[in-house]
Length: 173
Image 1 (cartoon, rainbow, N blue to C red):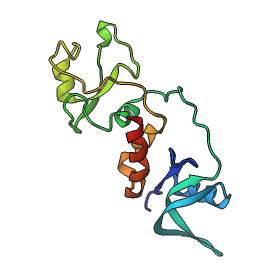
Image 2 (tube, rainbow, N blue to C red; image 1 turned 60 degrees about the vertical axis):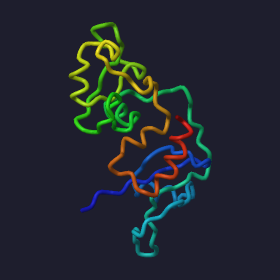
Image 3 (tube, rainbow, N blue to C red; image 1 turned 90 degrees about the vertical axis):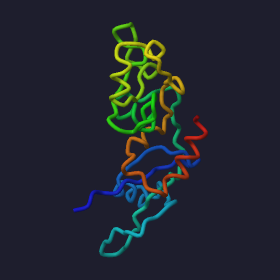
Image 4 (cartoon, rainbow, N blue to C red; image 1 turned 90 degrees about the horizontal axis):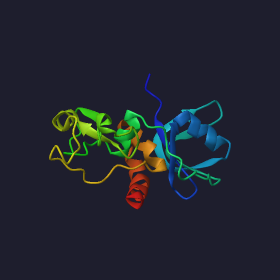
């Protein structure tokens, strides 16, 4: 049995809001709470109807996204925020989480002090600040944008999602 495909959910303004299962997306479509923006060539079949499986749907009613509230920090969310790249060398292999100011030196466990790091860079930096280790960050870490959780599904991102994600990723940078 194949896994259920993921569907990108957009606000009425085409802002990425969420990722849901194809089954949940079809329920939203049947309840007239969403419309299909991008469609796949697959379909759900019932006795009386065939429903196209969407790749991208858009909600019919605007959803207010609370600004200023940040998602709970997790390894997966930090990797998503940093686009699954080491923030010191750019590698995408053997990723770990690094505290910019080490906790042993008074650094806290917050969005502003945690970055994605590959294991070799993390080992090289050790218990030092980036400056003391002769390393630099291209940009200082910050809390993620509200839509960043979409990148948590990086293995499931379909090509049809990219125009909507790139539009808001470039606007947020």
